[in-house]
Image (cartoon, rainbow, N blue to C red; front, side, top):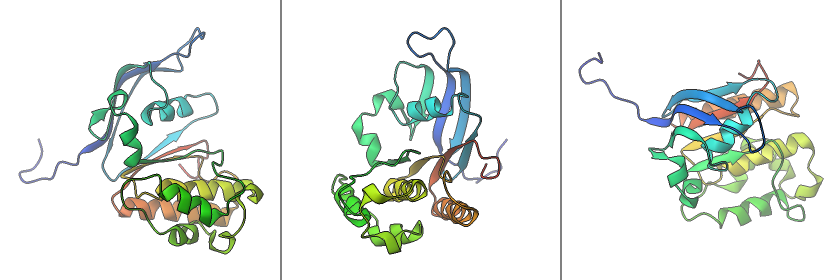
Length: 204
């Protein structure tokens, strides 16, 4: 029983009885998954390749449909959201996503125009992921570690309530990984809910 006057923290993600099988596969990629993530929490999805982490993330972000069970994100079944959910969630995949002929700054400025609401300062985000000195670098020339950091900056651009980070320390040295951990903690302190997919036990 909750104490009188205690604040109930809303569920940002509520998954119950989730199962998913890829077409042509004899075995489910996910079977009977259930989890709840409250507003302002960090959830780490830890496991080896093939464990179903990416499948779960794709379902939670609306990229995979045809699942069984219930998957509620920000108070609504994810299959009922439509494109407007991307105004409220941010996603950073492990593979860099950018326009190679544009600089890092130009990429963020261009992407910012795709959102209807207010966005964060591109220069500040590049600094937060230690790319301020590379703002004028063409995206095609990024290293893997730079691409991972840039993806995180891009995911945070529209100040989403819920952020999905796929292997956010991949390709980073220990100093860069620690800086990424600090950034994740800072976003949580701002009230953001964060889902981190990783096989890195230290990060988890």
